[in-house]
Length: 101
Image (cartoon, rainbow, N blue to C red; front, side):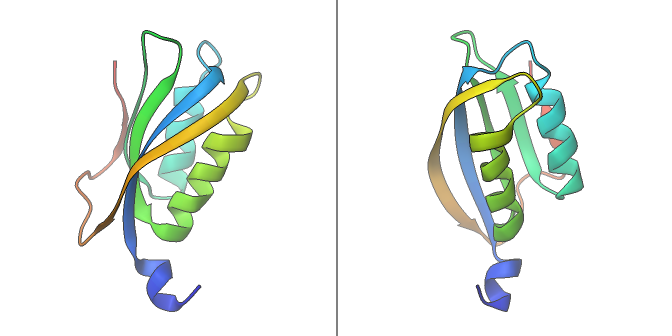
């Protein structure tokens, strides 16, 4: 990965499937996002999944995707994480990371 990749801003939407509600998934995700300086949002859906949008530098977004796909919050069971609408950004659309209801 080149230096320009490290500063490249990307955005992606995600949906996490499995037993991911009722285990503070959104709270842990927000904490990690803030640590990685990721912007965007996350929320529970009515059909038991978790959806959101993340934006930040490519390495941090990749770390976040890894967490969303494999790690998650303690006690959750992730089946899969679908990623859609990859975009390169000239600047971030959000200035923080929020949990939506």
